[in-house]
Amino acid sequence: MKRLALIAVIASLALAECSLQSMQWTAFKTPLKLGVKGTFDKIAFVKGKNCLEGAEVIINKDSVNTKNPGRDKTLDTFFFGKLKGDIKAKVVKVNDKTLDIAITLNGVTKTIPFTYSEKNGIVTAKGVIDLFDFSGSKALRSINKACYDKHQGKTWNDVELTFTIDKQNSVQKAKDTVDMIKSMM
Image 1: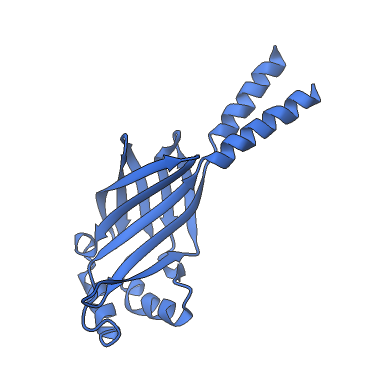
Image 2: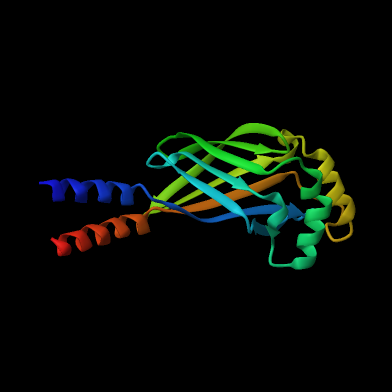
């Protein structure tokens, strides 16, 4: 009986695990609204209740990565360097198809609605922030000025955010752990 209880506890702990697989942003330039994608190399993820509810990320804004070192340096100097503090996000409400996420950027916190779907244990969420809502006009003007010719005079204030969280591996991990414990009995 104690063994079965131990299996149940270990399985529930393993099932509670989840991991952030990716976090991507897409900013826009030129009058044609061409997208520029990127992420950050330093992202801390804290899982929430049932993986999503209360989940948090802390992003070191100085770790921008667009796979273009020259662009990264420009973004770091003329955009992210103009913003205060790290970027933080917390899932404050989980609905059937939407998440409310409190995002802190440039010292300003706003709750942003994200749509999400889950397929095969992978949660994909998408939302849009407006840099003006986060007192980001100074940083936006700075990057627009630095890249004026490349952006054809237009850097957009909306930024798309997408992230994926993997819940599937944790389910498989739990099954593997239970099977391993059973084999040891």
